[in-house]
Image (tube, rainbow, N blue to C red; front, top):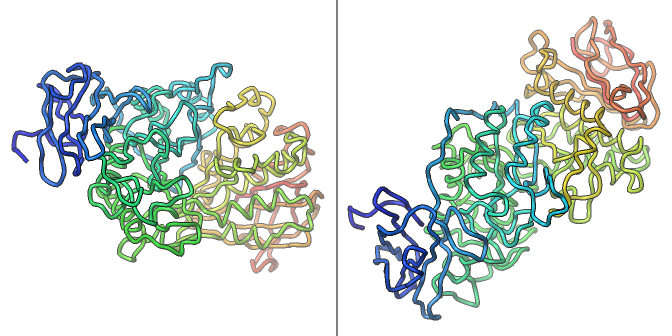
Length: 595
């Protein structure tokens, strides 16, 4: 490579023009065509570099110009969108030379400590659709206009479903056509950077969902990019044998090929470096480390890729969080590279979401398992509860044949008493159990039905269910110890002290270091009957103040406002603890006590 060439991949603007570099090892000739040369292939040929790379420096090109690569291949002359394009006109249009400069102003935001995160997962296209009669999805700026709601709620981190350019204008985002480009229908890269800047100004971190278990499969210019393929496969970016098969098409990247590994690494680093995101959530890592759901055909290259990306993130952005959606309850996912692990910071916890949903969705009280609830509360990975994300709703859990928790409880009346009581019971467990809690968009105002990328949230329900919104706010504020009375909820320690399957009662302690105002006691009643004068063990004698009661009528006119009060624990062994007290709790309710 000449010393005078500009480093980087794709289109690299500089003071004297734009440099272009592309990897196409099987091409016979490569040119860059665009609005700067009337798309004439003869005007700007690229020179061959080492290892299949091609390069040209074009003085006529500038930011805003559209372009493509023209490749002379064994299969004929083809034009392709730049794999590293930061911007495209649309998924089947042209690449755009994106402006790398953005005025971040005073953005020196740092993500909160992981034990103090409350994540809110959202989908840009449906989160705040201000014109639902328009076929177009909502845009990035519409999300910004709801930051006031999220900030009041207490949310300090949003997790955004994928925004890499996908086929069409509406999608969940898990079909990335152009990995480095930001979805044009959402507003493109500048608008996404503005969203992140405004999130940071509001004290909200941003985690981005990325998809590396497959590419596309639609509108995929990476497919047979330079004309070469084997076994009817996808060419240089993909496995061309049995390893290519995924549930979404035969488009699994070739994790063993150095240039593809670099491509994925560069993509992860771009979001952190250029867009200032605070973390990445990697979609369905099971299909990176294995070919199918049984994981019987493992992919060592995929495992080492995850180690590589996580190591690079930790090296360059030590405070950034990486989250795996693996859902196989494998501690190795969050273990260190030194121990052979994949080195993710944390992972979505299937051992929490499924038993908790089951416990509140099941119709008959006598069929609820308090043992399963206990195990869900106590689950952890590598001895650290922060290595898991806990939730009762996510984009996957409320789609693909499943609905929101309230509607799963009662399909005919998702806002009735049972649905409100038991869905908030699940939410209270999310926000009081060890781990990093996560909510899904609209959960706080009893959004019903199931998630679709064409159906916007019903924001009018924030008024209909303003009491439920307040409950979520109160729980989040307790989770973050906003009033200095619930520090235990930020700590790593938990002990389930009471499990009664016959009465559907469970109680657990949370604490940090056992200092003043450190311990909280959470009591949950999974039964339709209230419990009066119910005896529980307490660690310390004296007064225990009631700091939360989910049955308060202020949360819903349908709630009973059961007369739960503070209690005084007196010496007397119970539940393996040295003190005891009698509490009263409403139906399907949660109480939180603190000293």
